[in-house]
Amino acid sequence: MTTSKKRIGIVGARGHTGAELIKLVAAHPSLELAYVSSRELDGQRVDAQVSEYHGDLRYTSPAHDELPALDADVVVLALPNGKASVCVEAFDKAGKDPVIVDLSADYRFDSHWYYGLPELTRNKWRGEKRISNPGCYATAMQLSVAPLKDVLAAPPVCFGVSGYSGAGTTPSDKNNPEKLRDNLMPYSLTGHMHEKEASRHLGIPVEFMPHVAPHFRGLTVTTNLYLSRPHKREDILALFQQAYAGEKLVRVLDEAPWVSQIAGKHHAEIGGFAVSADGKRVVVVATLDNLLKGAATQAVQNINRVIGVDEYASIPV
Ligand SMILES: NC(=O)C1=CN([C@@H]2O[C@H](COP(=O)(O)OP(=O)(O)OC[C@H]3O[C@@H](n4cnc5c(N)ncnc54)[C@H](OP(=O)(O)O)[C@@H]3O)[C@@H](O)[C@H]2O)C=CC1
Ligand SMILES: CC(=O)N[C@@H](CCC(=O)OP(=O)(O)O)C(=O)O
Image (cartoon, rainbow, N blue to C red; front, top):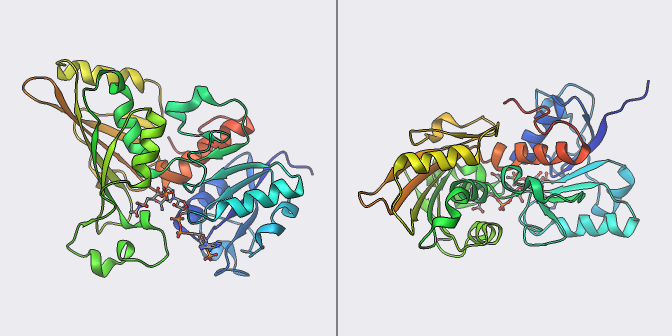
């Protein structure tokens, strides 16, 4: 029997985002795993690591120049920053042109790659097969600022707090539960990559102050926005409701959302909308699961669009 499913390879599948992608692919009506790579898990069964996957596939550890011969229709690069280009170059050199989705920051500033934050860039896709998947905080910042972009009097200031899965699996202070216990760890307080990324894709400067907290997954971005003219709270709420009307993966709430409610969910929540007495300052709170809407779920939205199936296929909405 022939299958019409597209075959997908995940490079860097041991990581947190790779594991979430395997789960989404396992439930997908139009995708099947071609290969999943990990040096550490090489030879081990995938179902032993990810119980949602049912099948006989095992992790392999191909060198980057062996990837093109593995013949996947879609390749997701879930590697640490700085590691994507050798893989991309290997496909170019071999004359292979699969859909490539890069989860790292490596192509987020490359205008030849489509920047896939569907709720904001859906209409900019011109058939590109190379997709740069946005950063987790950068997704929350852009969703929080975009509806007010035209009425700002100053750069938005974003205070971010992430669960430590955002720091990946390579050991560091930022994913060390001991050092995070009873703690909030500030880092990269100016010039974080996601500050540059959100500024570039919004087209206005954004200021960002990230922190890591002891919880595992989910992030909060609280954004302070100065407005060029006074606004009533209901007008601001209406702007957000209008901007995200019909969006299944962005929910506009009245209350400020809690990160404890977003872990394991595929959508982002935006709420709060606390307005100052003079109506010229508003504070907006966004939460999302960094591993899902901040990475794997957004990648699947992008893949679905490129392979021509429903954008939400396999995503519980
Ligand atoms: N975690 C998050 O919340 C988010 C992460 N991202 C981005 O997604 C990418 C993956 O993140 P995440 O899953 O958290 O990362 P992890 O650190 O959890 O996983 C990294 C993966 O890459 C492999 N790997 C590590 N070092 C190398 C190397 N030098 N060469 C080849 N493979 C390597 C690892 O497997 P092995 O060592 O077994 O080969 C592992 O599968 C990163 O670029 C990250 O910035 C984007 C949005 C959110
Ligand atoms: C808590 C933590 O460390 N978070 C990561 C962001 C995770 C992410 O989105 O990563 P990329 O932009 O690298 O793809 C960081 O601040 O670098």
